[in-house]
Image 1 (cartoon, rainbow, N blue to C red):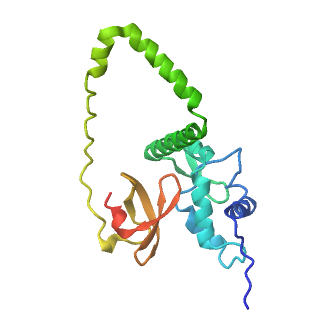
Image 2: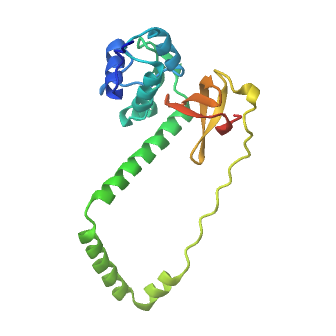
Length: 216
């Protein structure tokens, strides 16, 4: 029976990257934005490795590039680096804005989870007392203001986007990928039938379907 010595935990795969490419991957201090397309470079360097697979590296990259420290580095750094720590292409303004948005959303989700976990009984009681006192003080005027219907926020209209033709679903094609309700610029790194791997502007690796890709 064939045995495997491949690492099983993503954190172990990250440790492998820290040790194998110390000038590129950092645990805390010195984190810098990675070169666009760095997964391909890693895949070439680890070809035939008995420790990690390309799938594991892709998962580790996704975790590394979604870390708050990494996203902060994208917003503050002028250039990206390659596997050997050498300066590569300049960080584009679009990449900075995307990293800022991802950072804000991630922090908001974390704050929401913490708030949900915190006991709410005392908080609700204080809020009730405070609102009661304010309502009594404001009188009828406050009541009239409170009864006014809230203005509906104007609906945002997104620009017309066109699906990516099947002929353009190929490696290195620049595309827009649908993530939730947002469209994010990315580069196709791998095509496997109807599954497509793309690299976002932040460096994050994402697996998606061809029908979620659009023309830039």
